[in-house]
Length: 394
Image (tube, rainbow, N blue to C red; front, side):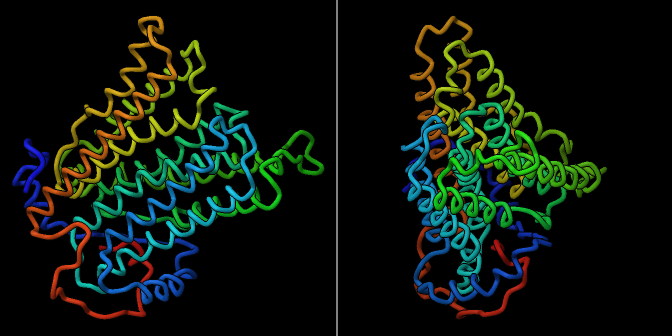
């Protein structure tokens, strides 16, 4: 039974998606050391458990542990309980581990499909928002709102650009210091905050007058962001596999910047123009609202890459930010806090609607189930060997 009317994917897109082959390279520093743990972990997973179920389980754990942190410190200024920071570290570790083995489980059960790759990246786009937000709360960046905005949107931007370069070159590339390294750094931040309390990050470093420990995080963020953006844009400008160096869809390599700018630019303008200081007073809510818009746009980019299709510039998720913008333009007719909640609800429902409909259409086309292993499916047993590039392979 179909629960949708207008199809989001054309027959041509579904055909190209069915022909899509996952391509990934990795030179991650940590992945080789973690492979034995991931291989052991997947060997303990029952064969009847669907890979997509593993993915969504990890995402759910990560979201719930982060929301506990948000509950205790919605303004990222209040010192969250130490146990909440430790719980968040555990939640991120669980998510990271499960995210690394879902592809391995797909190979064990013979259920690899383009849907698995799409589902995995879709969950990652949402998780990125929560992971970045949790790190900011753990070090009380609410006292530095502009820095917190920068920190969160750096993570969101890097994730988007990673798939931007994939849309251009056809290959997802992981650098030496990439997702895994960032996740374990944030796990370390949560553990330190859990043991010593979030106030530890306000400690001044000896011999450097006025330089607090948390400033090291800012320096690391800037350095790693610039290094990763440099390598990504090198691929974007020179690695196009389409005609005349274009994207896999034959479009301009710069075209993906347009839909993403419709997220970042309004987010910054609304933050700076707010007379009620809606971002400074409710940073977690604000980041989540615009983060979900970014996740929706990123999902559309992933779908465009896998279906070799042109990416649409406008999106229904942008109605959420438009509510805030128009409310400001008409002199705050409605309290911004309530409009922000309305924005979050709208973009979240819109994201869920889009993802579920795309998954249903792909399931219908490929004749597969999203969360079930086919009866009598091809189970190839447990493999204890894997290469570094298999981390998220579908």
